[in-house]
Image (cartoon, rainbow, N blue to C red):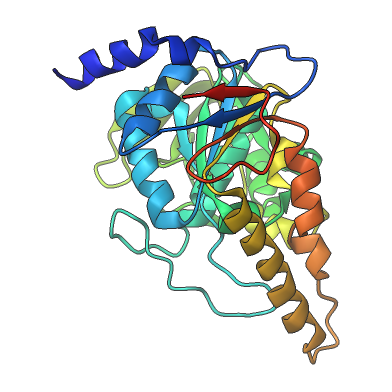
Length: 333
């Protein structure tokens, strides 16, 4: 029996039909999964995603576990519908970068910021339902507000009237670096009627071709070969959301999520404990600061334990692996 056969077996199972996830639920529903072992959870989540057209956030214990689960779901669901939301690379009140190794084994300073920006952009703009995989450390950090993200996003469509001068001014305002050729996110280059921009929410840079002061074409391209990869009717340019968040009011990532989102929790008590400890560590560092420069207070950067519980209570919940913290409306064995 192959993976596709297994997927079909899970999709047809009576247990998947027991999920009460919406869309259009008037109130959140608490689910409790029992008897889940091995890789079954990946198949269950994929089957629930296919049957119930709602968004899903799966919260695992740590980055490594979440990364493996993310890879599983990418193989079971279309890769462009599954996102990974990591923690940022910088600790509050410290000026050095963390040694943050991506689960692929490749180290890159801006990789986590790029992935966080990609998820925020997807949540804010995508109409089709999606899956986000994350973990306690990532969700404990607050993010730039929706209003700020929209205000600092440059949207370009084919046929738009756009001058090089305007693009240059906008890129500088969004704190992009002008270079001869783009080779990493946060850069832009202007050569003749061609403008290359590498958004923080994309794995590849965009090429904007202008005919006079009109957008003639938009496409992603390979920065090494300079060859086109895909044409686009419109694109969105997102700045470094982590840098932006340091300047403005933040909000919980959970506040970004649409109302029809099901949140899957592996171990609520462990997650809640991490959220509280992260908040307490930040408070300790904040209290020990010796600087005249105004710093964001811990409650502006991190969710508190109470805030985390309040935010979760607004959504449908699926608990598994450990004794449930919420009283179950639906128990699935």
